[in-house]
Image (tube, rainbow, N blue to C red; front, top):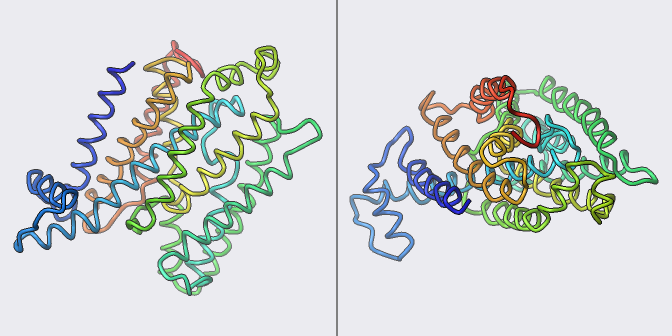
Length: 340
């Protein structure tokens, strides 16, 4: 297990450096390492490298780090949500939170609301409407017996369709074509607006969420086997599921606010991780964030390079990779949800 974690940490480190170096304007790897080292240690930047330093430090590094944070967070949330609702098709967006966020983001892009916040208007509106969607899902799905997997999935799916319809209506009625295009681009996921200021909150929430879920690996194992089994093993099922709902919803809201709805990461990476280490969440939770982080870094590199100088939405690439991978996964007779 330690060897697998060490290998993924190495892959992630190489991926981050490659993600910073590669782009429409490539920076040699040795120069990238030199500039990163100088920036981290307070060294002197040669005058002839000032332009490349701006690309490496101000533009690409925050974007690559945010890609790693979002990938790690979505993969971890996917693991937790699949156990919480005991559904192999569950992902971070099954509760309708991303669709709720899309309403706020689309309203900013098409109607110009919160324009006084400048570059932070879109992420702020997305976060606020994501929280509103979270509260609505919770209130609607909760009964006197607490939260149940089926009601959570059904409520989240139904409200997601409603939120998506509102977002599409805003896009359809957009007075400008470029506004509609910007809204659709965000709905498919993008890190084009990444900056240093957007990184600390996303990184902190993701780290806290991963840390909390890692301490609850045994309870997640029990919950994945069913409520009755979990109860007999001493897990307070309803309270634990409520805590999971709050943690995963908060992580999803923050991640969607900074990156849009990046599909397939939270669905595919948990299953691929289980194929390697089995169903034990004590093994899945340390690996899934690292795998998701490295994966989304390379997806973002592809988004910048494949149609340069234009960018592709992240969701287009994750779908192009995720669909065939998932079909192959489902064709494996030895694989079942939660194990090999």
